Image (cartoon, rainbow, N blue to C red; front, side, top):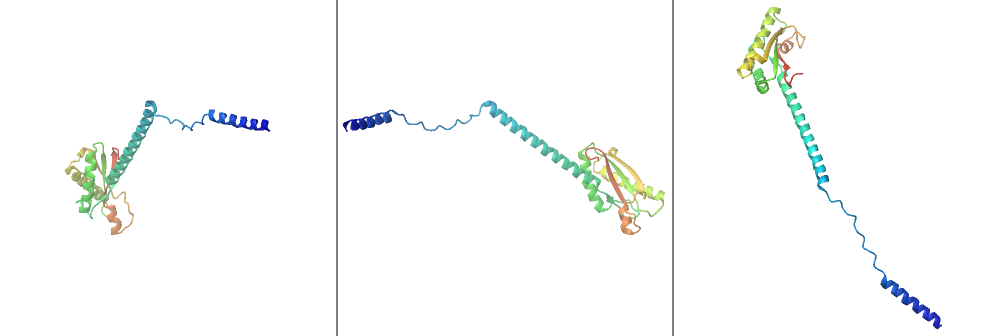
Length: 188
């Protein structure tokens, strides 16, 4: 019995000594975080600058396309005339007032101003009336500072109606001056 008691005491002493000599398990260490170096920081900011520059260029290009489309729409707007007249109507003056700054703003813009008439009257008379309408519009624009060398005039008389009807509503749509941009960014 003494032998078993001694043996039990020895086992207890041994386990106590073993437990006291053991070091505690180290606390878990977090994985080191990557510290940005000058090279990686430069790469990221260079990529960000490139992306910003690309976005700025795309936005500028979109604005430029919108400006050109707006200029094209203003320049293409038709002006209308009363029967047997080449006097510019008040509603047409407002439209021409919108055109002149667009043309003045870009010296590369050139316009073809084409006069038209309705079908009433002789061919010769209508060609002459269409030309007087086109020239009246050119004169109006040059009075607002547009170089007359950038404005070409022609007449189609009654040859190119937009409405083939034979009533006043149709004829009023045919008494007009149309504009074609022949050079510059707004040209088609």
